[in-house]
Image (cartoon, rainbow, N blue to C red):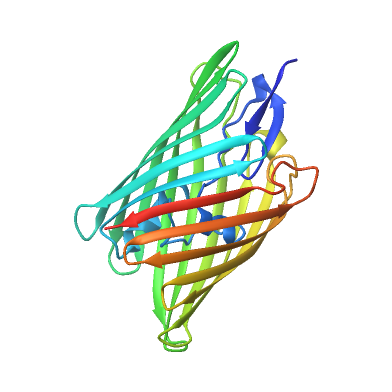
Length: 291
C-alpha cells in the first residue's frame, strides 16, 4: 500500500493513506523552546494553535505573527492573528501550509474565539478545516477544539501569577473517509510566573496530554519547560518533551530564545531528538507584531 509522510503532533511519520490523521504541531517558537508547553502560553506567537482561551488574558489588543518550521525535508509555514473588539471578546484566525513536495500540498485554516469570564476564567475554541492533497486525490476534514483558561495572582516574590489551561482537540472527522478518525486528544497544563525583581522574571510550566483515537496514536505525552525573561526584552528557554508513541510524538529536549523590542517579537527554538525520528535538528522561527 502506498505510504505518505504525514505531519504529526510533534513529528512527521509514515502511515497508510486510509489511516491518515491530521496531527499538526504548533509552529510557535516560544512553545517549542519550552518543551511543548502550550496550554498556559499567553505571550506566544500563535495562541490559536496553543490554547485560544488564554488569549483573553493578553494585555495586547491585537497581534499578527508568522512562523517558519524546518522539520526534516519538509517546510512548514504559518500565519495567524487575533483582534480584541472589547475587554472580554477576542477573535482569531490562522493559516498553515506544510508537506509541499512530490505532488503533496497540505493546508489548514483555523477560526477561533475566546471570551473572558470575570477576572479569573476564560473560555475559547477553534474550528479547523484541513485539506490534504495527494498525487492520486485529496481528502478534507473539519474539527473543533474546546478550550478553558484560568489565572490567579499570588503572593510570591515581587509578584506572581498562577495559570492553568485545558483543551479538548480534534472533535470531528473526514468528509468522505468515515472510517478514518482524527487524533482526538485532551491536554491540561499549569504554569507559574514570578518576578524576582522588576528586571527578572521566571516562568515554569508543564502540560500533560492523552490521545484517545485512533488506536495507532493512542498514548500520553508530557511537556515541562522554563523561561527566564530579562527586563521584558530578552528571553531564554529550555524544556523537555516525553512522548509515549515515538513514531508520532517522540521525546526530545529543546532550547530557545526571544527578543522583544517595543511591539516587535522575534523567537527561535531548536529541538534535540533521536536520530531515528524526523524531529532531529528541527527548528522554528516566529516573528510578529503586537498592537
